[in-house]
Length: 188
Image 1 (cartoon, rainbow, N blue to C red):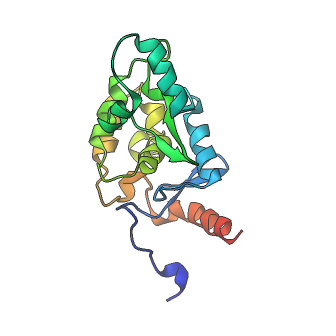
Image 2: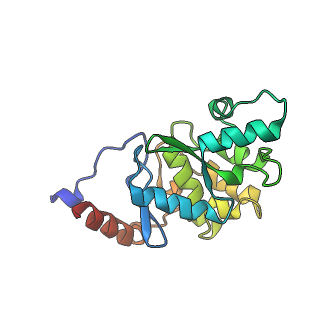
Image 3: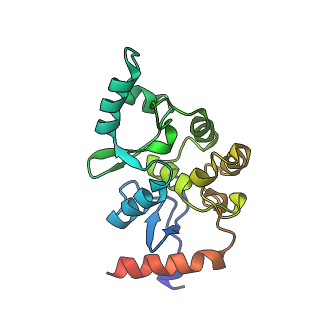
């Protein structure tokens, strides 16, 4: 048995898979994403409002919420909002807010509630950004406004073990090119 055939143990109950967005890839089971993974998430969320540093979002919320006593840490703690860590900063995908007034949208919260609670922040961000077979190859973030019920179904299809439903990979043959890319990147 070669080392390539030996599966690593699951990390935080997630599958070991590489996902592609354009020419960059990101690894959903890592709590400390690589630079290429971070850039891939930025690219994946760009069309739906982008991604902003938590400090910036906190400042904007204070300006727009006028008198409401809701803090960014409270929104994250209560799982009304999600983000991910990268290089000592907390990054927030902005699709979770109304663009004009920074009010939280209900749909992303509902989908987040349907995802396994054991997943890391990084895994949640990757799930929203990655193509999903339950959504005909669209990512959940791209399908969210058009078909909330389908995105909820895709979220419910995931389980805490992180089966192939996590990122909608249909088969081992569909994952093979991404795995080759990941191995090649690891050798560099």
